[in-house]
Length: 275
Image (cartoon, rainbow, N blue to C red):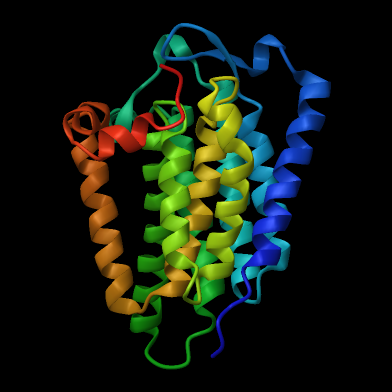
């Protein structure tokens, strides 16, 4: 197969993200519902999240089938369930991390974070089933492919959200990861992520905007679809194992501390950010 065309998807996602962000600013800019406090204690807009998420969905229109449908479903699910967590979380009873949300579920309490985990897991599995297609051989093998692919999409969505702790960090991560997908079959889906992240990066670095769960989960889910498209069965299992390992590690160690202690990562993380 020839090299996939990636420019239309990147341009469409970038232009749509920027346009939606301008429209949202006119409608809701500065309102308390869409304002949060950043790590410096300063007010910051959450409107980047829906702008990036809707830009991603616009960009999926340029993808070939079946990845168009898979990326649209995954991105829409990441955006919708992420926004629920952004806007409806009870801060007085917030549970943090995978352990906190799963622990609450085990005790019969459905937090917004728990709903997000279940919802994104479900839509990611549907997206993977659409991408894999109908079974043509062993149903057990087909089911394994669907579950592995769905898990890869869902865990990637969560992992990007875990990185959204400092200005530009999550966007730089998905930008670099999406670049790696461009030469392969996952290139168009990766280009969608690249375009949307490029539109959002300047305001994020300037600490005017933040992704929030909605934007981070949408970007991560479509990045997961790009990884699914660009790898075979063994590659998907390897990527899933790495993503799960990082997710579990985040329950015990601070990514911010690791980055601060690691030369190269520290400088990349700080690039473009306010001193």
